[in-house]
Image (cartoon, rainbow, N blue to C red; front, side, top):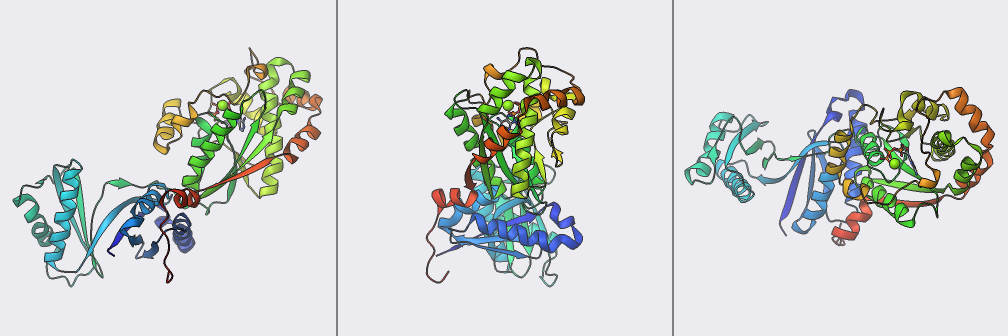
Length: 403
Ligand code: ATP
Ligand code: MG
């Protein structure tokens, strides 16, 4: 059966000097995890990632390359002999496929790693392009082509077009582990994705207040965890029942402080979990000034209840920037479903805008919530989502004996 070859270019990790080997290993290993149930081979050669497999593995390989963090771009590649004729043939196939996808103009970029090739780069580009424009398939535009066809002459020849962007960033797993406070809104899934792109392994925690928050709200958060796990290789979501903690807040906290008290209680519970999981930080979707609990004073209060570093990757972004990323990573449609992750019963009409840490700590102590928090933590439920399970369910190809 014919083999298809995909090539991906490594991003920022190529800048990492002495850690380069570890980063590359991690990238290859992550790609292999996606493709565990698929007849495909992942290799790293001369700073490029190659994935090869039979035609039937194409959907799985493309899913992997669309989600794998650590690559700047990827392409299905024609691999051919180092002869002008076979290069021309591959260029023609690439051009025809791009024309079908709507391209009108093209340019060829040649790189000759093998300097013994008889034509120089300029001559090879001219020769390889000739048939495509002579036959009226595409016209040449050297400044803003719809299609850039790359020809690389190495130990073999690789011909591909340069349109598919990768997720960029550092391979997941090279920057430790964080615990994401994942709610059903737009922000926290984006925050998790942002940290994954910095190479962080991300697990999640969700606090629910059943029956005041619905089973649908919980399902929505699980769906979001599943979506972000397709970028993060895998993720665990810990679901902590917080109804009793919320009731305690309602009984003992001045109403205007109740949201902040809830944030502080979440931080305490998340700290217990981070400790257990070996997570080195907490991550939230907070953004400065977005809602009352996110003034700089109130962010300081939340942070005061947190023992490990609290990372807020969205702190300086505006809502539209967050929405753009949510659309791009595929969480937007789920996030805007109308199941709320908090309940009006617990939401103050006039939340305090600029609380002091001293005052908030004083109220927090009066809650005497530590035991309730510990009990809620002990009752947590854990679900796991993994990119490889998604691939296995949707695109698995049976392995043969010899693989
Ligand atoms: P999001 O869009 O992520 O829901 P938001 O703009 O609604 O955020 P808040 O509701 O104030 O803002 O929440 C701030 C952050 O606190 C969230 O981004 C999330 O990290 C965390 N958080 C809030 N509610 C929960 C919850 N029920 N479970 C876990 N984390 C939560
Ligand atoms: Mg929210």
